[in-house]
Amino acid sequence: MILCSNPHAQYLALREEIDAAVQRVLNSGWYILGDEVAAFEAEFSAHFGIEHAIGVGSGTEAIHLALAACEIGADDEVVTVSHTAVATVAAIELTGATPVLVDVDPVTMTLNPAQLESAITPRTKAILPVHLYGQSADMDGICEVASRHGLRVIEDASQAHGASWNGRRVGAIGDAGCFSLYPTKNLGGLGDGGIVTTADADLAQRMRSLREYGWERRFISERPGWNTRLDEIQAAVLRVKLKHLDRFTQLRRDIAARYDSGLSDLDIQLPSRRADDGHVFHLYVVRAKQRDSLLEFLRAREIGASLHYPEPVHRQPAYRNRLPGSNDLPVTERLADEILSLPIYPELSSDDQQRVIAAVSAFYGAEHAANPHAA
Ligand SMILES: *Cc1c(COP(=O)(O)O)cnc(C)c1O
Image (cartoon, rainbow, N blue to C red; front, side, top):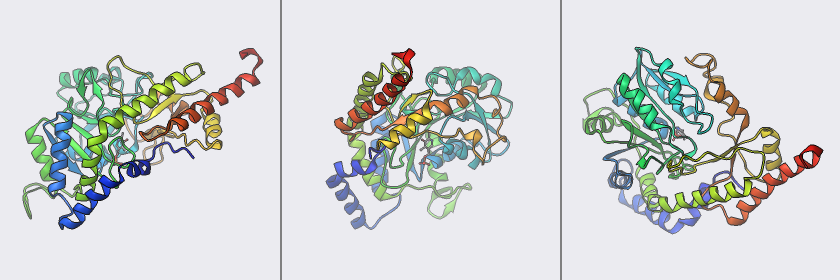
């Protein structure tokens, strides 16, 4: 089976370094928020050129923490997309605020800034764009609307470690950048983890305090916080992987380029590329009219194609018909029936890439054979 993503392959590729890092932590006697976390935070902010980085328990908590540190909560609204991981919307609700959903651009599949104006109300406090699949949302359009209305911009960069928008790194453009470090992400640990970046020193300090019970010093809470800490083992593993991230990103881009040329003649829509978008290909998502039969065809041939995501958030049982904006998402609705993610991860072998291309081509070959007019 060719998996869609494969964190085990990455562990095997870096086994000696990772095993040594884990041993170092086991022997240190300190397991949560210690030297490894501090070093990882410093290395992450240096790598991405963003002043502050705060390690947390997950990507969901990274978003929750950033919003809470901006004092967003009950009675407030945060505008985001339905075409995303459910975590984006769940994190907004964790603060007590109401997620307001807007549609995505049909080409880039990220938040469409033209939809923002009509979604903003006097209660709106922030815009939460998602850099989906590894590609930055339209940050010029989004930041323009945000500054006109005095809104915060919190970036969900969970799928876009190292991606950029016109040469600027995502996570450094809005007020804060939220990254998941879940094992399958472009930078992923061997367990849960997340990190928030910001250039705002006050925001950074509030986030450090809130992630551990609102402490400024041990055992004394200055504000009501909670617990969303990064552990030392994850930080040590992530330090190893961060050193290889640029190389891994290049490998993802190489695979995407190979798919682009191998699939260009078929009746499917390939991922869009902005002129200077710095796409990091967390996922390689095509659009196909006969998506369900293509998915079945690939799975029957041991190719782990997948759907990100099979249902947009507003159509899921937990959220159905209760979030503002849910009735006006035609692009999101259409994408849900057409998107398909092909396997992509840095260790995916050249032979396996070729098998994926051959299988997708075979599906369309069979379609053409069945349709005499297409010949
Ligand atoms: C993975 C992901 C998250 C959530 O991250 P967790 O670490 O699983 O909590 C949030 N947003 C997006 C877009 C994601 O892909």
